[in-house]
Length: 312
Image (cartoon, rainbow, N blue to C red; front, side):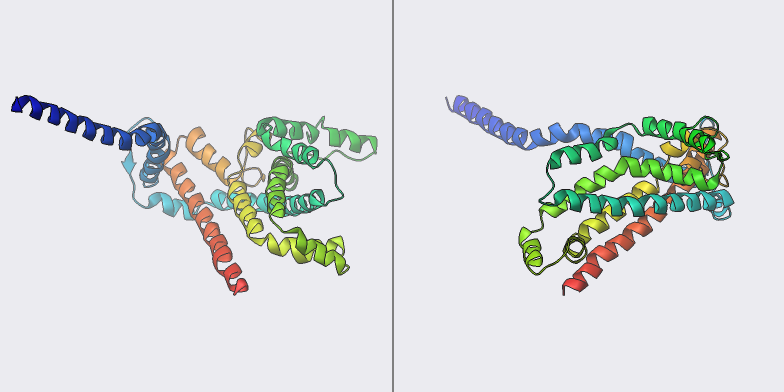
């Protein structure tokens, strides 16, 4: 009889322990697929690329450790530095006007006199969800060297056609225009969301004092949106440093650093996947990571110390 009672108690104790373990483990089981996928497609490529950065590998044979040789080659690589120059030029041409226009549009749409705000927000946001390849092809047709729309207009005006795609100056502008077209609405929505957090009392008090819309924008909107502006600058910088699809679609072959279309990510693609120099391609990738990290630290300094200091 005592043995039977002990067996029942043991079974009950086991069920209680199993139930508690099950309750604690269930949430982890549900999120486990994410971590498994991250380990396979996220962490493993990062670790493997770090190993390849110190190695030589053509994708087929054995990985040969070369130490710092790839990094020495990187520092002396003129194409690498020219690709950085192209990327930074495109980033400046794209980011500065895009963020300024996005902020102005958000401010105008937020005005009480503007109706159908949802219509304007949707219209400006649509390019963001459009395929970047499709948009780039469209811009490529508009600025085509031979039969582009712009050159057709120039010929009607009696002007000489311009080789937009072959010009380092123009190809950078075209790539930047694609980025402006695609991300203008996205940044406008972010600014608009920030404007919704600003109390209307500030604007009402300023209007009573006789402030113009320009003064409302420069004296109230911009200062109060400074953290959001710095955030969009950071995100646009990181995105701008990774420009690839636009350049690759416009100049699919024979892209050179001197030609203006060879961005840093395009250079990584050429080196690793077209030339099968996966080791050196990984080195270039980590060079890009360092550049992004430096810019992120600068942004962190601006957001954490400059704004905090101004508030004090």
